[in-house]
Image (cartoon, rainbow over all chains, first blue to last red; front, side, top):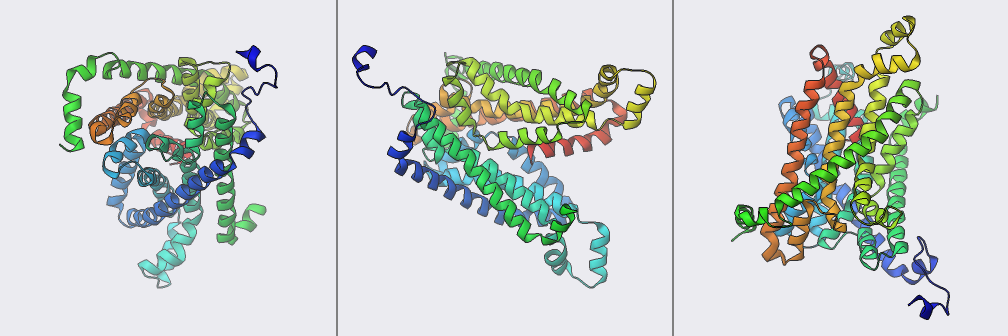
Amino acid sequence: MSLHLSYRADPGNPWFSWQYVRDNSDTILAALREHTWLTARAVVIAALVALPLAVLAYWFRSLSASILALTGVLYTVPSLALFAFLAPYLGIGAITVLTVVALYALLVIVRNALAGLNQVPPEVREAAEGMGYGRWGRLFRIELPLALPGILTGVRLATVSTVALVTVGVVVGRGGLGQLIFAGFQNNFYKAQIMTGTVLCVLLALVLDLVLAGVGRLLTPWLRGRSAR
Amino acid sequence: MNPVEQAVVWLNDPLNWTNPGGVLDRLGEHLSMSALAVLLGCLVAWPIGLWLGHSGRGGGLVLLVSNVTLAIPTLALLTILPLTFLGFGRPAVVVALAVFAVPPLLANAYTGVRQADPEARDAAHGMGLSGGQVLRRVELPLAVPYLAAGFRTAAVQVVATAALASFVNGGGLGQIIRAGFGLDIAAGGGQIIAGGVLVAGLALLVEGLLAIVERLVTPRPIRSVRRRANRRATAATAGS
């Protein structure tokens, strides 16, 4: 076989190939777009649900323990099992992937946000109370801003792990870049395709993390001087 | 028949358990590859973590390792490693899983040694113990609860991740779920959910058992203090 092909340069199976990237830029970009879009939606939904939950847990100590225990148990459940539980009901498609990854992101954000809220010094809380802040005023003007670093840590961790987790979506055929990796594996173990998907995945996580870190710096200007000193 | 009823029927069919490639086979594969991966992870991560903690250097490295592995998709490692010198089959899967066991093991070994009471360390030095002896006789025993906490996190992580080995036909309980997805969702729904129950049940079981082990290896007087510290240490590594 190799004799027959030896009249031209052996294409081989390189780990990286510009040729592949050029020829398949449409597919790659579509996968990247789907991956980014899934991640963004999942994290936004997760944050919108997680923050009220964290505040509830912060206000009512009795809820705190049960919310933490529940998130702990859910976090132990493997992602593939969660796909297995939801797919028969939600069907094969993006909605299943979105639900699963949003659930995991939710757990991470709730825990970090609660930790951030609990770190608000009691003196600060009492001072706010003494200044006449009600429960809501205190929450929005004192406690949430002070918990912002913890919340942002949660969102960043959730984003990075969501980018990695979306690839498991290949089980229902909507894994974004995971689709690229998996197809490469099934297509005669085409290394360039697997590597391109992987590198883009890691880069996407890195870029989103840096963007969120930048947003965090903008949102917490009072921390900047402290860390510089 | 709804999918849950189908799942109950599937789980109650003894042939689904005892057939070749049935639940018992898959469970054996799952446990053996998880055990090997955790063992490999321990062999790599513990010596490095203990040494870094002892010498007080490399805190940044520990953090870097856990951040980088968080961003690498499991699927990528599972598909890339068989194409390297490891070749197809068990070794590649075990190494891929071990990679995800390293961060919690490493971070907890490091933290465990770092948190040792500096006065105990000074006293040991004053008694004439060498650096290696301090590590072996003082810091290591004090770090045991942390090592146990890291072991638990890593083991649960590996057992959970091992389900994904089915993507590359690596065996394990995930294979049952994959086979279910291979059928039509209406026909395979029961098997999919049954597989999910098995995978999730195993992860929760391992978590529960190791929680007990962790409690047993923690000396009674420092249990309450340590448990809080452990939770903090695990939270720091798992990011949750």
